[in-house]
View 1 (cartoon, helix red, strand yellow):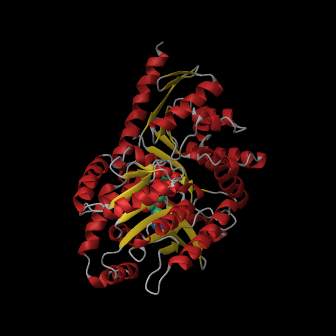
View 2 (view 1 turned 30 degrees about the horizontal axis):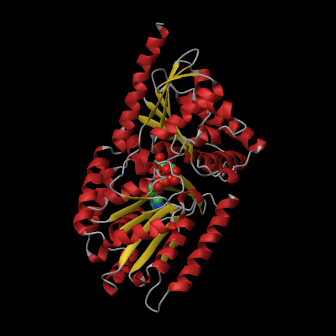
View 3 (view 1 turned 90 degrees about the horizontal axis):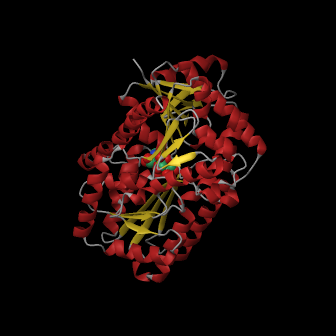
Length: 483
Ligand code: ADQ
């Protein structure tokens, strides 16, 4: 029977070494949380890196790493420290990530990064080829593995290969600045189907293919000499039921079962019953607009001092890529901004910002989603943004207001949210005021529409849509061969 081979940089589980023992935890991040349910339910194996470098794994635990991965239908790719540096922290996160998010001033064109990226992509492709059998479908994910589709195609010309890009694809004018632009496009074109979150990213990609490689592009099909590649948008959904169910259970739980975080949130609500909690959750990343958000919040408190002691920004930032200099600088900037604003506005009984810099267990995420009246998500650029969708899914009484940046892919599907430009502090301040004063009936009306849509287009539907489009490309191939 044929299977699906999922391949991504990281596995959905993270293996760490503690006191000479292996500890397995779920991976955090959009791709892992989104695809996990598809992987669990279907006949698939998942190939990716476990999080431990070759140097970190003691010889006597090598087999155990493989077994731990296998127990979850996963295969761990071994990477050395040097490979992780050049491939992951280097080319992926210092070249492609900033470039694709329009942070050109952060984009480094380092030849050594590119060389390691190529080598590591070959390593991933080889691992896939070990498990590939005729009739299998291969689904490659994200910007760390842009060359893998072609590397597999070169060895298995008949393979059915899909590629999904989880981050934006930039406009041609930005993409063309990449020294290795041809190789990157050719790598992706090894796939039969290339998916993006939005129509805009799809158009940008097609325009780069036609202008850089000069291939014929008709609507959303690219004609190569030997086959046709289909390009389409598949906006990724969330595991809606999981979030809805978790929120419902949360309200059913007794006081004894409450987390410390929930007790603190409840204390806040008791002490200031008419105060509003404003939530933000992101990986600590410059694309997420965290510093902008804090500055906009400062502007809001200055412009509308009547809200002092009446609002609180609850900000969860998950540590991410802390080896990359820009992330270290951003961390310092945020620490300083939070300190300055708390110092400037705090009263004896109130601090404007509660800031958590850590990863939190799932239950605590639910505590936050269900307790906060407003979610303020202000990315400067974001492929999709699943947090926006998760917040809405947990609002089981349909209240709550989502303020969302127009730069997030999710904004295309969430028109009923309050959409803002993350660079416009004036607009953010006015929108925060609007959100605080929004009547319950209006909140309910907006959220019911959003919930209906998110429930229908959940992650399962997303994966199924992508897979059926991938299977349909076989027809394309037959049609092409008969010409
Ligand atoms: P990310 O940049 O990681 O994903 P996002 O889509 O918001 O961004 O996903 C974050 C995920 O991590 C959410 O599912 C959230 O629940 C989870 N998470 C956040 N904080 C957590 C914490 N403290 N503990 C546990 N889990 C936490 C990339 C792209 C996005 C795109 C996704 C999916 O950058 O634009 O939406 O992939 O394609």
